[in-house]
Length: 128
Image 1 (cartoon, rainbow, N blue to C red):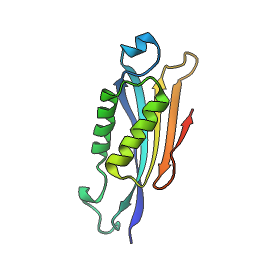
Image 2: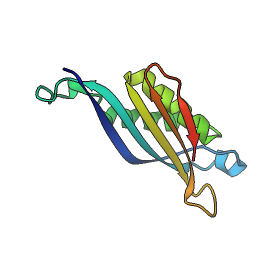
Image 3: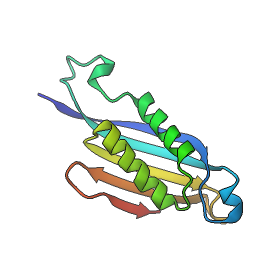
């Protein structure tokens, strides 16, 4: 029996060009990314090989490359497009992505956006 398995990468810190203000279009901003994803795993008693999973270092490399190559204005756009990239590249069964921009609001810890997606369902974007 194949058992679904959820994995989590927490607090991945990146710098990228993101924002609408003129200075934000020139100075890389800090983003903190959390991603949870579900894969179809082989039975646990048989699984102990990288080929049986989605390598989380590949997920991290994709996120870092996406951040370096996409100079977007909106956190919502960044989050949705990154989720789409991860879904297509890795064929994930389920995905939750949370992207935080620390310091985006002077009287708060930051602004963030989250998206959750399951295979066969439309993505739902949440601004937090």
